[in-house]
Amino acid sequence: MRKKIVAGNWKMNTSIQEGVELAKAVAAGAAGTPENVGLIVAAPFTHLASVAEVLKGSKVELSAQNCADHEKGAYTGEVSVGMLVSAGCSWTILGHSERRQYYGETDEKLVVKTRLALEAGLGVILCVGENLEQREEGKHFEVVTSQIENVLFNFTAEEMSKIVVAYEPVWAIGTGKTASAEQAEEIHACIRKVLAGKFGEEVAQDTTILYGGSCKPSNAKELFAQEDIDGGLIGGAALKADDFLAIACSY
Ligand code: PEP
Image 1 (cartoon, rainbow, N blue to C red):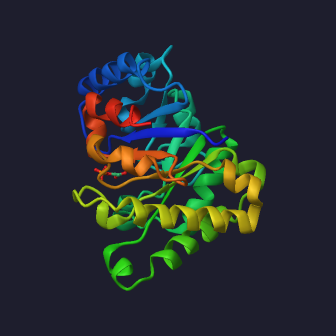
Image 2: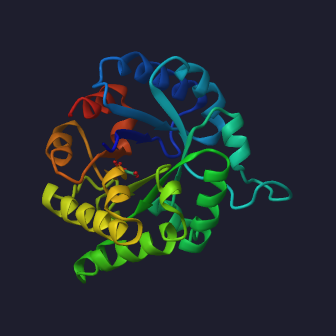
């Protein structure tokens, strides 16, 4: 049975002190969320070690939002997977559309980063999704399929057990426009089919596929009720502990 996960992406928000308070509230409320739903918070790099302390003993796991594409060395300003592990992370998000769009993150780079993360023992939440133009041109299946093929087809079935896919239509991120449950489900089913074609039905059925894009307490239930939607990657609503926990309780 694949795992259900609700993950919060704080992006570049909160001071360390605010982040610690947010993490405390999430950790305190986590016990009241369904046992079969895993919780993850992806905090900014500067917050990780402090947030890790707060999350100790709770079921909430810690994620980074990115990692360097080199193991170590003269790469000023970068943060390595080893540093993330030493700060207490067990996950990293990779390939978020904001990184693809603003920081030139390519599928090729994501293969390198995913490999480094897995080798360091981190789980990876790999984001994929089409932009508005691609959706309007009817290319959404094609775009998402090629992102999955370009990155994940470089890994083994065994490595897939440490990878979660997040489908995030770019036009729905931070815009208040949620993909309808049907729109999300048809892409999730497509992703699972593409994974089955490469890795076999068992791996595809075991892979957690999250939906992200203006997910909130009022729409999470309908989205999560879809057969191939296994939880959410939450941006804006993850900055309020009550909303984040309410989303997790939508199962
Ligand atoms: C995100 O950026 O991962 C996201 C889903 O953002 P929001 O929930 O704010 O649309």
